[in-house]
Length: 116
Image (cartoon, rainbow, N blue to C red; front, side, top):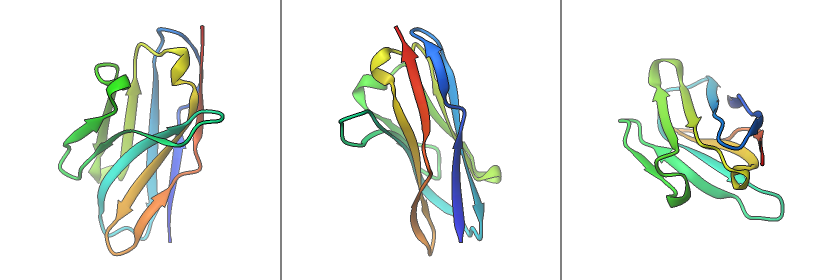
């Protein structure tokens, strides 16, 4: 059994920053790819960006240059540094991890609200 827990969400003014964390725990052999997704009210969940086990990243165009994904494999933790936040970044942010021999798991989500 494994668990993913996100933290770091909150309310911030436009132009501000937040750092989200996603920590994995449980019977983990290794974690392959990890990703951040978000879902705004009335919209489908979308990929924000992802990171391979080797640290290669990929981002949605709307967050390029503003968001940075990183991970600490020793701590089984992934981070999302969000700068220059905009009201349209408001959403519930979820992390997803691909665990070796187990499969994909999702976190419970953390709310990010950006006020104008």
